[in-house]
Amino acid sequence: MSVAEQSIAGAEARGHGFLASSVGRKVVMAATGIILFGFVTVHMIGNTQAYLGAEGFNAYAKFLHSMLHGAGIWIFRAVLLTAVGLHIWAAVTLTLDNQAARPVGYRAQQSIASTWASRTMRWSGVILAVFIVYHLLHLTTGTVHPNFDHTNPYANFVSGFKVPLAAGFYIVAQLCLGLHMWHGVWSVTQSLGLAHPRYDSLRRSFATGLTLLVVGVNITFPIAVLTGFIH
Ligand code: HEM
Image 1 (cartoon, rainbow, N blue to C red):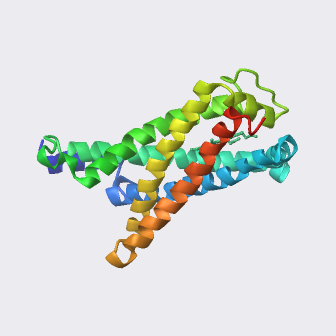
Image 2: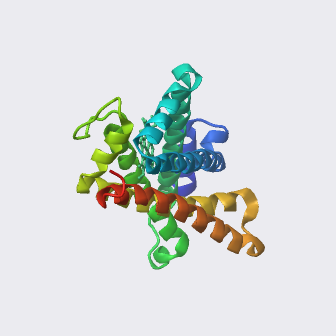
């Protein structure tokens, strides 16, 4: 089967229409990426309540769980889960289509910047997916937490990060989040039509500034516990 026939067969297998097209799936990636990016930024700001101590942090956690009489967190979870699912689906199918359209692969050109960026997106994305599952089992359900207390999110936060291996994994995952976010913000601003020499330094500063802020603050949490600053 020729390359063109393989691409058409791939689109037919998924059905016709906007979502079957690679442009449609890139729009899905960008839109869900913006939602997830908004979430990690707000989540980082929310977690800074840990610096206020047990009372402030637990009050914040209680507020999250009681929004709209308890329905708010479930609406928010549904949106987040859908966004993560669609983001991964678009990434996997676009990658498979690219591979099908390039069965021989590049040799000399393999080190070009765009290839490096997309390879980084793949492995940082996989590590982030593993991290999210671990993180939910750790601080939301408590399944893999050494001494989880459903009534005390602050104590879970502190005793969770006292385990060096867990704290280390959080730090590595935040570095992956940084790479993923940086390339994501860079490429979404390109998709929005801002890829122009006049805007490139602004795009680079925006991507770098936001990534450093979210990742930098997130990394302080496990470090603050390990050093005894948060206790
Ligand atoms: C060091 C960084 C982070 C810390 C300290 C942290 C802390 C927490 C805590 C304490 C909770 C439980 C809130 C509660 O149920 O009361 C939570 C939930 C959650 N976190 Fe994080 N988080 C971090 C990074 C991340 C990142 C990078 C992501 C996503 C990529 C993420 C995704 C989530 C999700 C999806 C929930 C579940 C929200 C829910 O439905 O209850 N977190 N986090």
